[in-house]
Length: 174
Image 1 (spheres, one colour):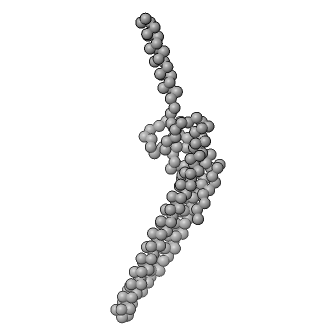
Image 2: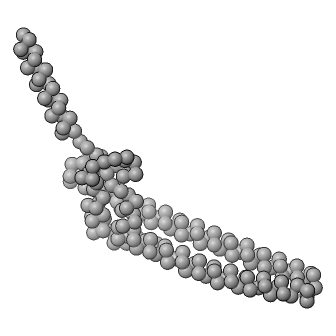
Image 3: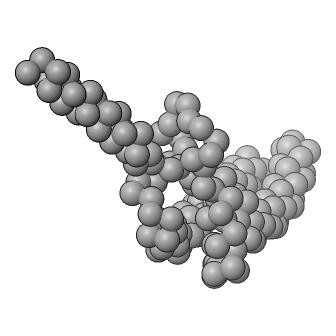
């Protein structure tokens, strides 16, 4: 009886050890890396960077003109009437406020387009990851930023980028 009990315990122990060794281990992807390094992500970033730089360049030119106008007003302060001086200063303040509004509008526009590009990329990424999971029989994929430490062999980021680059060449941003 004791021998039969020992055999059962050994068999159960081996069964549970074997079961745990075959337990599914989740894979992970670095979404930030995918967004920044995929072909579509790079193109979107380049487009948004150019838009921001061009907009800031125009605003910088306007700012220089406003500074020139300010110097002229200061130089004319003693030569013109106080009412005329006040009107010019008020006009200059209005131009400065408009410049600030334009800068805020530009930054908001670029930010919104960046969000649209990110969402579009993620929308295209989800089916790719789902397909890859079914193909490789992966049961769970986690974002890398949620992981403290993991084996590099569980990282499927590069494989996902390769598939994404084949399926999505660019994102439309207007």
